[in-house]
Length: 171
Length: 454
Image (tube, rainbow over all chains, first blue to last red):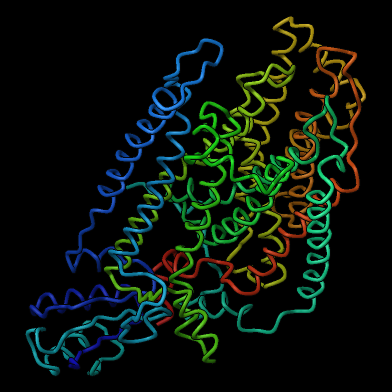
């Protein structure tokens, strides 16, 4: 079922920040903000949090344990080789390969996590309220039902904050 | 907090966001210029020559090269190290400057990363064909096998090298690609033809620029940036251990890892400079790649050149100070005054002497001079690798095994081929991918500049 949305278009980051402030002061619930480049204030305004770095650390820790265990198993248990009497568990020479494989694991894991959490993957059907958001406009999206105000009230607040356009659209 | 505009405006011409998108995607929207077609024809011809020599090497074996029992590593390893070195700067550029929050990187990082990906692809060809039977290359993967479950040697720098380069290629390519996703979305949303919208739409992976996406995108950038910074340092350190763990005079030195890493970044930055000058000149992007950007790269090159000079001097000093006659012979008789003296002095002059003229502000603001110096540095870095690889092997401990080495036509063609593959890749990059990171450049446009326009 389609939902009616109210869309506020802003020309600059400063106008957008004023728009966010305007919506907040009137207790209108913002559904999403679309920007041509990352705007930290917008992310904070929607109270979005990410545990990306924690997840990356977990991938790294798992990789260190996994790689060292694998090297121990191959070199000491499965097929020990005598390199001029050196110990088969040659830990110092395992460090470099562990480091590189840890980096590889963290990278692949992070890419996978990003794709999953941000929903960015090949062939994704996307929803973009105004195509200019990837070019030069900053877009605030309200869901008409849950925004906490009618079109007139939200449009007036957005216009007062410096929105260049406000319109209603059904998606 | 302390803040000073030491670099002045990063983007000239009083642009607005829309103008930035238009300027940067203009080469994709417009028809390919004549010079591009000519350059592509030359590059493809060179690449074809390279592919033919690859076929020739695989068909007849590496006996077609002039490497021998003494000089077992010839042009192939020189070129491998040279390309890996060039490939280093792209990621080094993006990542170190990202972590240090240097905003001037935004105009340059995309091209530097593209260069990395193509250079590392070229580099990877050489060790693969150097195996002789390239179709058995998969033996190097550690997998359960029927050869008595024999594992690869995890203690060997050659194996570390294989893993490090594969990881580096994968990470550089992903860092580059995910950096481009928001820009592909910009092209998708401005596309006028259905075909273009479909192609760039597929490449954009459904990007919309919502806060949910940007939050994770920033997280990904910093995680990949932080972790790849370690990789940049480790990859070339590992390449250096291919040499340093041996007992060949001139190779077994603890100086090698930092010397190789710095040398790699030096050659890569020089190649970044070459590319940026071409991009700015032929695509009229002077407002984005300003004199100030080139000035900043030139200053870094002068600094690294000083480190290179110190490293060369340290090597020679340590040979003398150690009192080891083989080291003394390698450096003083073989390299400085011997039959390879041209290569030695070419290395010193190109890498440690000529870049010093960039201390002059006049030279740093002369684009032609910068272009020539950047090419000279890359020639010098090739000679450096020749010095390391060939001179030590040609005259080692036993005079009875001394020999001379010059490349065969197959080896020369392989090298020219990789230059062709690299330049073909770079030309396709010019044509079909935004050469400058659109969303990142927009983020460094000061809000006041936009306000003034309204």
